[in-house]
Length: 377
Image (tube, rainbow, N blue to C red; front, side):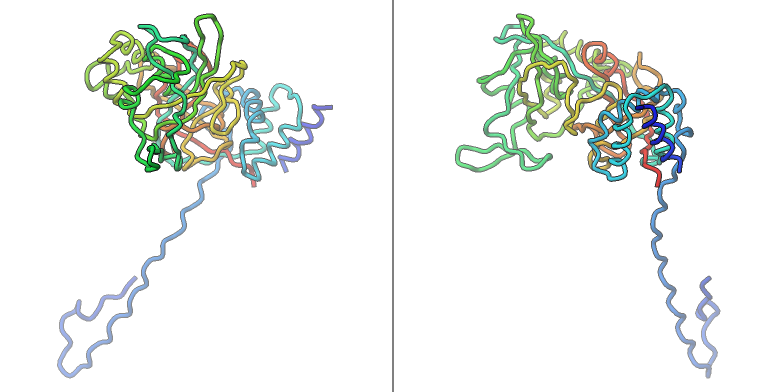
């Protein structure tokens, strides 16, 4: 019966200016002066041509993707979109029930075409949900406090965060250095400094306490300072090889130089994130679209160029870091944002939870081309 519903849905989807006299010398005596040449109209700007649409089968690497998995990931998250045409396709997909092998590709190819985003090349990176050890009280090793959102922090807009002083006046919120050298009162847990730094970069994760209890550390706020990556400064200072600025390489260096040296490097990034703790329900982390992120099928994007719930094809190749997979070509949904994710051809691919996902994510820095999937008109 469900198969019949999808079959019905798939069937519905198939349906010259002249020279002036002065250019020829002066006017002869006795001749009337020539009338001035009529002003030539200024060229009118032409509206930009709409992006050229192509069939999904023309996308680089399309035939190699797992289309059924891509379809399932999309229809589980497609309600994030506020686009009317996408919402209609989402409703059809969600009403179809279980699918048979190949149905995902058929649905997608009949429902969508693709148009190039930007036309140029950008950067693909990746992120993950880390799982780190933590302690309820500080030790020499677990010395970095997981701080809750401060009571004096006020968010004016996503880019403006201020500190409300006792007299009611407002100033820019302090940077990482000032926060880390302030009181540790109210710490939620204690972590290794380099792992707290990576938790702040990733935005959320799971903490495993000394008795084995697991809790989620969920993003609560940041201090409004710009995000500054530390990979390039570490490379430029000769601390890491040019082709080995992966997440693992950075974290290993910070751990080996824990203390003043590592603190100095981490403080090159003035942004500081605060957290709240919640029970670990075993579910994936939730992105900016307030939807759990499907592993390998969700990306963080710049909301100035992309809408939440947008369906995208990413083509990442030519990795810069040693040990990386050569290509990432797949269908993904825009479900998250990030402080370092800026521009139209820019994406951060969510790769899942734990150490293996972290090792892979830390090596992703690929040249990126992107296509937006648009419903057929």
